[in-house]
Amino acid sequence: MPADWKTDPALPETIRHGLTRFCTDLTAALGDQLIAVVLYGGLAKGEFTPGNSDVNVLVVLRSATLPALDALLPAMEQARAEFPLALLTLAEADLPTFSEVFPIKFTDIQRQHRLLAGREIFAQLAITRDRLRRQCARELQNLLLRLRSFYLQRGHRPEQLEETLTHAVSSFLTTLGALVELQTGERPATKATTVANADKLGLNAQFLRDLLALKRGELKPDAAALKQLFGAFLDTIHQAARLTEKL
Image (cartoon, rainbow, N blue to C red; front, side):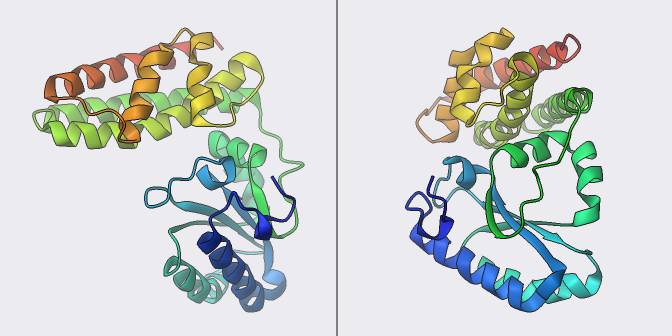
């Protein structure tokens, strides 16, 4: 990627302009309260789908007080009128604590992000392997419980099964990427590379490709096939959860 994100053709022009305005507005409104503005998620990884993906931005403040949030609010509202901004805000001093509580998210941001404004804050961030493993286990078990509950409530409605699968696959693959890192020492750069490495965990990579195709609208299963996909997804999540006990 080009060093200057403002001229990077990989970022859609309208979003580049919107992010430029957002950073300018934040700097003017917050002054030295603003520590960093960081782009992360799909757009930072080259997985952005216009009309479907959010623009994930982390704003780090010297202190995340109510006055600071009030000062940030107009810039956020202006940005959301221009592009699908999903904003995460925290105080600089809270970064080590948040990274310990949410190690999957913060290792993901640490490894793949673009600094939009301010200074680099992730270089010294240290997240232990055990915290990462424990969150993987927690996320997978929670997802399994939620999907079982959903199926008991709405499993007779195929359109809702499809919607649930397309939403759940992203969070599952994020966790799976962390599991791949625990197994191999390297975090996959994209969802597609996470799927490509699934066989290293003993998981069915082709099934996961089918889930990605469903999410992208490239797979159009009937009601019976959707039910099979849902059942296979539950089995895959359970299998991945068991893996966390061995890593």
